[in-house]
Amino acid sequence: MASIHSRSHSPDRSPIAIRNFSKERYVSSDWMERERTALWATSWLVAGVACDVRNPGQFITFEIGAESIIIARGTDGRLRAMHNACTHRGTRLVTEPMGVLRKFVCPYHAWVYGLDGALESVPGAARFSNGVPKDKLALRPVEVEEALGLVFVRLTPGPLSLADFLAPLHEAIGAYRLDLMDVTNDQTVSHLCNWKAIIDNFAELYHVPFLHPIHRRMFECATAPIGLFEHGHTVVYVEGGVTDSGFPVSDVPSDMQAMQLEAVGLDPAAFRGRVSEIRRALQRAKRALAQEQGLAYDGFSDAQLTDVWQFNLFPNVILSVTPESAWLMRSRPDAADPGRSMLDMITLVRFHGSESPGGDPGDPAAARIGTHFRLNGQRPADYVRPPRDSFTHEDILAGRKTMTVTIDEDISLLGRVQQGMASQGFGSVWLSDEECRVQHFHDALDACLAAG
Image: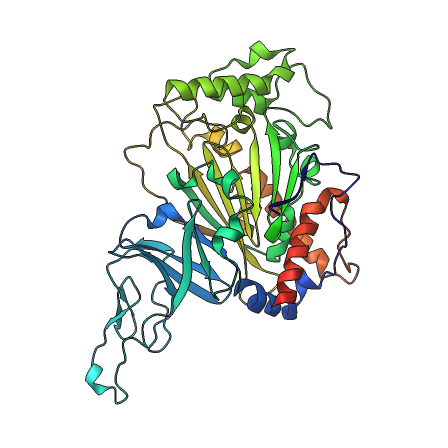
C-alpha cells in the first residue's frame, strides 16, 4: 500500500496513534550509536544532486557521521560510489565537496586510483614484501543509484530496492523534473541540535503561525492536506497565493501576495476587495506566461502552479518543490555529539524560456521568498555552479549569513529546543494530533532500529 493516509488535515484527530516518546533519542550517545549501525548504515540516503555528476570526471563527496563517500562519473559514463579512504593507510583522498578529476591521488604516499576506484599505481611497489594485490586494494565500493534527479547511496546492501523505497512518492516528485534543474545556492550550517529536531521541525505546521509571520501572508497552513506513506515518507500540500485562514482576511493583498502578483506581471492594486481571487489569478497568469515561453506546464495542475508540495524522504531529507524550483534540505548527524548536527540546503532552479517578470533568482525579492513561484528565464550565459558555503548557526543569529527568512527563524529556535531537552525538567515529547507527521517519522525510525 503506497499511501497510508492522505486527507485534509484535522488538527483534533490524527490518522495514526500518537504514542509520544522519550527524549533519549535526542540526547543519548547510546541512541546515536544505535542509529549509526541500524539506520545510517542500512538506509538509502540522498548523497547529492545528479546535476553535479552529469559528466565524466565529475565527483561529489558525502559525509554521514564518521563516513565519507566519493561518488564519481567514470569515463565510461557509469556512476560509482566508494569509501573516501586510501587502502594503504586510510588517508582521505578528497576533502572538497565536489570537483572534476581524472584520477584520485592520495596526498600522503601518492597511491593512484581511477574514477572507478581501481588501484592503478603504487610508488615503490617492488618494496612491498606482501605484494600489492590491486584487486584487493581497490577503493571499497558503496551501492549507488540515481533517481528523481538525486543520487542515493546505501552503505550496506539490503533487500529493499531503491525503486520500492521511492515507489510511494516517485510519480509525484518525478513530475517536477529535478533532473532538469541547476544549483543556484549550496549551504551547510553546523547546528547545536540533534538531527531529528530538524526533521521534526519540517514535519509539522503547528509552529508556523507563531514563528513564521511571513507565511501567514502567503500560505494556508491551518488546513494543509497531508500524506503518510510507507517507509516513513510524508508529504504536506500547502496552498500558496492565499493568507492563513486562522487570521482575518484584508481587503487588500498582503505584501507577499503583492510580490507574487508582480512576479507574473499582475497589478496588486487591481485586487483590492478581491483578495480571494488572487490564487486563481496567479495560476492563470503563470500558465499564460509559460505558454508564451513554450514551457511544458501541461503536466501540472493549476494548484501546483501556486502551491508548495513538501516531501519528507525518510530518514533525513526535506524536499520543497514547485514547477520552477526546489529546496533540498538534508539533516546529518554529528560524528560524536548527539546534540550537534549539520543542515544542508541546496536551491535548485529550472532555467528555461526567455526573460520574464521577476525572473532573476538572485534579486532581493527572491532572497525573501526564495525562488518559488517565479519563472526563471534562460540560464545566464555566465552561470557557474556556486561553491558550497559552510558556516555556523551563530553566523545565522548574528546576521552574517542567511538561508532565507523562514529557515533562519527555524534555526534561531532549534538550538533552544536542544538546550531544553537536556534539562531534567523535560522527559518526553508530547505531540498534538496536528503533529502526526512527526509521529509517523519516529514510528519508522523505531521500526528501523528494532529491525537492526
